[in-house]
Image (tube, rainbow, N blue to C red):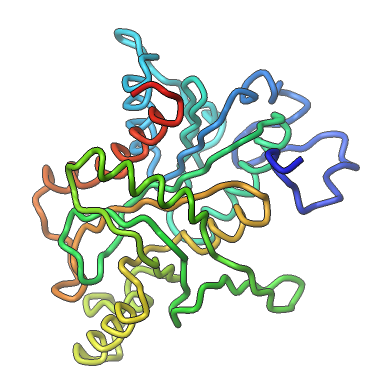
Length: 296
């Protein structure tokens, strides 16, 4: 049915056991419906510590926290990813870059399928470089685009190039934007997000170990990106959007811009300012979850 996870892999039905190796979980050793069957919201982000902080925050917001409560890492058997759960919310780290989040998503989508979860919403929360935005602005992604500004993920499968759509759920983006207006604490925009294969040359920085272009060429590229609708740059959104589309899952990307790339390349804001910026996506998504559950 439409509100359940759709797996694009007929081979899984023939397997007696499915080992989610990078989560240190398996269908023969864990009761997935019992552990995860009530999950409705999945939030994913790069760092394990940030995702643990998010689950503590959402527990407090939903009234599910208790004094001195700790949140154990469900994936403690591995050091690849971290996973935390409270009530209907699952919080998972995905590392940095397309390969890392891709591996995590394959196993996360299978986990939700084996747990017989329905009506799932997955949201990536994270940081990014803004284009033409004040630092601290939050971007809700309309489309993830590649480094040539096309809304697609290009992947090589069995030696052949496969093109996948990277559109995200339009209604979900609008709902998140409305939540930000209701919070009224920080600037939020809906725009395209450019997903690159690396942090330095792929994003047009001048401060990497290798740089064979000049500042004028860099600025022209970023201005071209802005003119095409791009408002921020990160390294995970394209495969995130593509895999959620194929699995029939409502998905969104909510990232804060730590700097305006038209002005500088290096992040030099004070630590306490950066910490506050990084809390903005979790505040927005936390508000959205509370509103969705009728707990405002």
